[in-house]
Length: 168
Image (cartoon, rainbow, N blue to C red):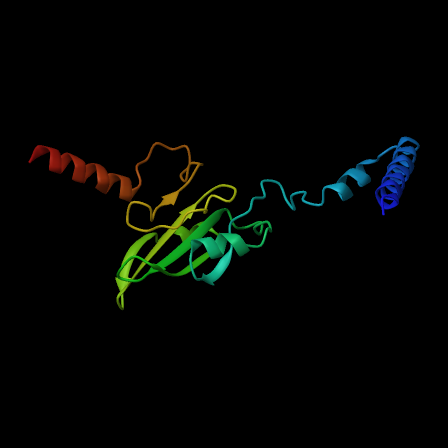
């Protein structure tokens, strides 16, 4: 019975020695390196989002999310979280989207459920789910407007409300 561990060690050492001898006699090329690392990005600036459709909760979504890159046109990660009246998750949907699909973030109540959606920019930035208005936002790491100093209508109305509230 004691011979088996010795035989296993000999076989292992022989295999390692053969592998080392073969690797020393061969120069690796760029093609070999690419084959060793098949996770190269499909296009410049490529990123990943957690992706699921109607998962039971955030844990199930993130746990089974496929590890794939977003399509070239998609720049954001979208999350829709549906909750029951008591705050328990009913469903979670996450995917890669374009900016057009990120324009309506926030929370709404419908048929006794609260549905919150959010968008973010960045590699797997949609780890968490939105649960209320403060987390149901559109967060971007890059400027959404050109370099002109013109205020957007939403920013203008926000500033107007701040000044009006401050003067009352």
